[in-house]
Image (cartoon, rainbow, N blue to C red; front, side, top):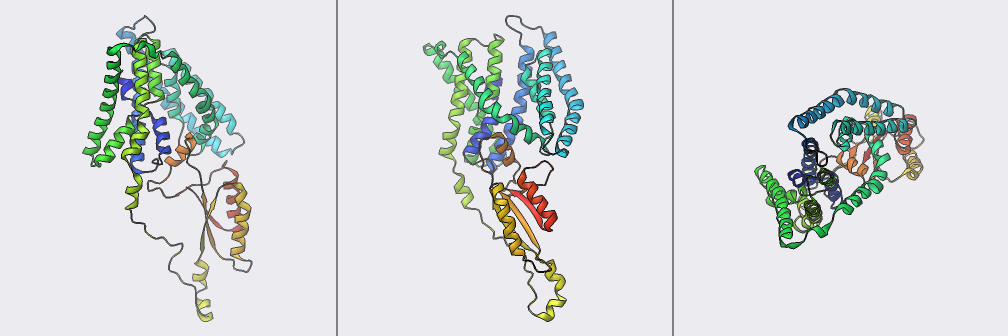
Length: 403
């Protein structure tokens, strides 16, 4: 019960922040960073809870529980020392091989997920812990992790995850919560869960110099529950640690604490008021360098004129914008020699949705919310390939950005 009430659901919180347009704000950054550490601690506590609980009516002895814990620690050490370098090699091969062979490496990765789950299940820890540890071994720099996420997120988020929640709902018998005593316990658990997360977060945030309103909002955000808690509760129910009434009470507690997050944050936190007080500094496209004003100075200033470049910011939404943009840039440059130097900033406009890949991309943005530069990588989409080729053949300096 302690693990179930102390968990913060990182995926659910990320989607709530994306829905409220707080993902790239200061409080969103703080909430996600804290939730990430909380999520890792929750997985460790999950493994600990499974290790010390028996299967069915068979309770494990302390020696058996210690053996399971040591085996789990050895599993994590082996995967970090042996599997992590292997996955780094797989990521490099996938990035260098372009998009053609990425499907093979994605399939290899998914096979590794299943193998890791099987290993932890044989140890005596839940299979999902092995899958989580394998996810930690996949390098996050580069495009490999993003490609794996894009391949599996629709299947997981739209099919498997709703089915798991549905199965948890089928196991929850609300009718077991009957009488004033059970309802009192439900209210007490909800109050305890909210007070523990909100007041604890509020105290630490205030000690770190955060404002009172922001500290309360951060506490409400950290009170979000989700998938990991349902996993803990289902394991407790399967191991006969929780009876039907306690299981139903804790599931309802998770639903209530998650439901109140969005309306509470919308009611007490108005980010537009905070951002409105910021001073916006004007930015120039080019420096104060001036072109030569006379033919006599033109010869002496030829080097300065050649050093000048026209900076163009172009916003695109997809591949259909590429030909028209290239034709426009070529028209601007003209056909006389020497051709005008152009630095082209390609700004990809990506809609921030609740998809995992979109949230991961937003996490890579700068903290101030400005567009961030993206390095070219082999195997990128057709838009990046097109502008990369144009930069080489047309001698144009292209800087890709994403907003």
